[in-house]
Image (tube, rainbow, N blue to C red):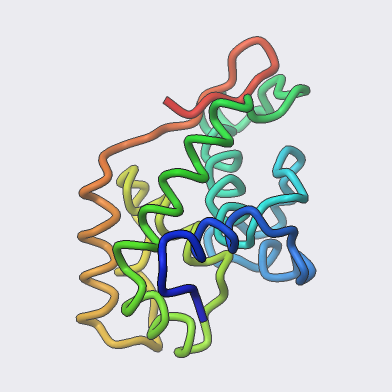
Length: 159
């Protein structure tokens, strides 16, 4: 369950991951993808968001792995944390229903990134949760506007 106050949400986001990343390797849209640049010291929500961003960044080079040796810039990680924190804060009730339906915290971040960037998947594409909840989460994601990942000189940037 997520926190009910913005300050509690911040604590969740900044807390070290306590669960293994097994769900990240089985996300339906990312078979056999193993993120190389997602920090260990972020919440599962942010981890899912950054994993989706890194995966989408691969596509800008025609499927070739771009030179991302340095990983995400600090500014990009901070932007991801702010956006995810705001998304969690604005959608607490629906996110709780989504999690209670058996979905993971990582998938919340993953779907938020895909939905906001119109990648053809996201909350609306899930089964096993109330359609109205999924529609509201999708609409809320899209209101954030696009924030795409790109690799420049070995760094991953979120615009």
